[in-house]
Amino acid sequence: MLPCDLIRNSFSAYQANRCSLETKKIIDEHLEKCEECREAYQAWVVSSQKKEEQNYRDLMNLSQKLKTDRRKKIMKWTAICLAIISVLVFIILMISGVQIRRG
Image 1: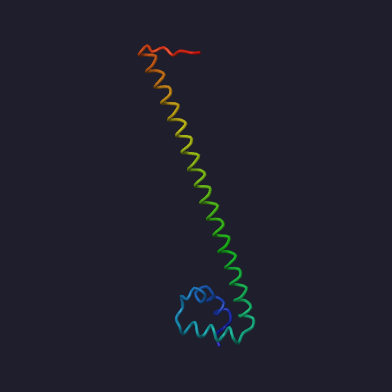
Image 2 (image 1 turned 90 degrees about the vertical axis):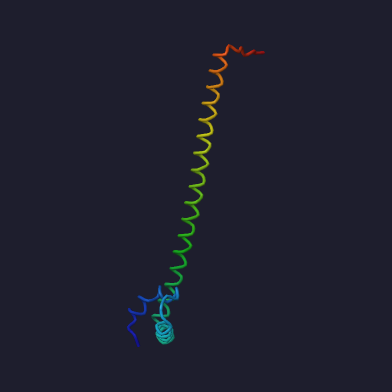
């Protein structure tokens, strides 16, 4: 039977199916026989799932922030463009002598 620390160091590859069939069989057999490693593996799986969930939440938050930032930039540049166009139209009207009637 392989040493427990070697088995525990293989949890990531084992769960992701990145180890050979022979290695998987050895780990399976070890986990069947060794209660400590079986409990450690179960705890590792739960911990990994929590990390994945947190990473997903972080990614979603970042995505939302980027969308919000993009919207803000679009709104800012739209306002700037409208202001420039308004000024240019006003200048053209002033140069051409068009009077703006009020009331």
